Amino acid sequence: MIGHPRGRFCVLMFESNTTMSVKKESIIMGRAQWMTAHPRILLGVWAVVMLAGVSLLSGCSQIVDPKPDARAPEANVKNYYILLESSKMEYRYDLATQNAFQPLADVLIMDMQGADPTDTYNSIPVWYCNWSYAAAGAGRPWFYALCDTEAVALGIEQNGNYTDSWIELKAPLSNGASWSFTSQGESVTATVTKYGVSAAVNGHTYDDVVVVDYKGAAGTAGTAWFARGTGTIYSHIERPGNQMMDLKFRSKS
Image 1 (cartoon, rainbow, N blue to C red):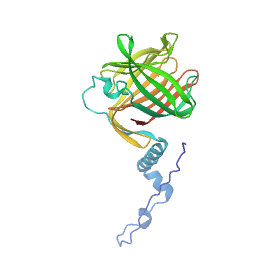
Image 2: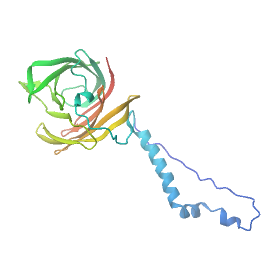
Image 3: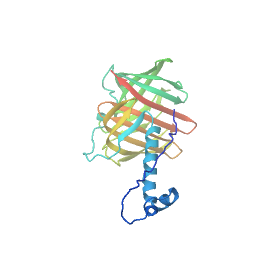
Image 4: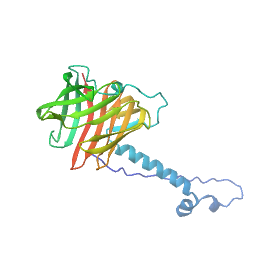
C-alpha cells in the first residue's frame, strides 16, 4: 500500500538576555520575515521532507546504495543470472501479473530442469525450468538461452516456436552499457543504469546488484535487478495491451 506521509518541520529561534545594545526586534523575526530572509534554508528543509517521503513510498523493493561502482566490467553474465545450470534448484517469487499465461497474484515456483539437449538458440544452449504456482498449481516449462555473453528469456514453446526473444543481460556488463533486441516484433533497448550497488527486496539486502532498464519503441518499459550469485531479485515489465508482470524474489533452495 502506498501512502503519502505528512511532513512537518519547525524552526527554533532563540532569544538572548544580553545587555548588548542590539535591539531585540532585530534579532527575533516574525515568521513571514524569517521565511523571506532565509529562502535557501527553507529549500533545504523541504528537500529533506521530500526525500523522507520518497523513502517511505519506495515500498519493499529499493536501491540502498545508488552510487555507481568503479569495478571492472563483467564478462560472464551467468554470475548475475538465475542458476539454470543447477538442476533441481528451486526459486520462489512473489508474482503479480496481467497476461493470459499466469494467475493475477500468486507465488511463482521455478524448478530448474537443466539443458535441453535437443535444441539451441542462435548457437546458444537452451535451458528450461518448470513454472508452477503455490495456489494455482501446475504451470508449464519456460525456456532460456544462456551462455557467458548472453541471457535470453524465450518464454514458452508454441507450435515448435518460442514466444519471445528478450535479452535480459548481455556482456560486458558495466554502468551505462546498452544493447538492443527485438521482442515480439518490438524494438527494445536495454541499459545498465546501476552497477555493483546494494538493493533491498522483501526485507533482505543484496550486495553487488546490476540494474537494467528496458524501453521499447511501442511502449514497453520496465526494470530488472540481478544479484551476483542469485540472479533476478526484482523485475517489473509493462507491455502494450495492458500486459504486466512483477516479480519479487523470496528464496532459492
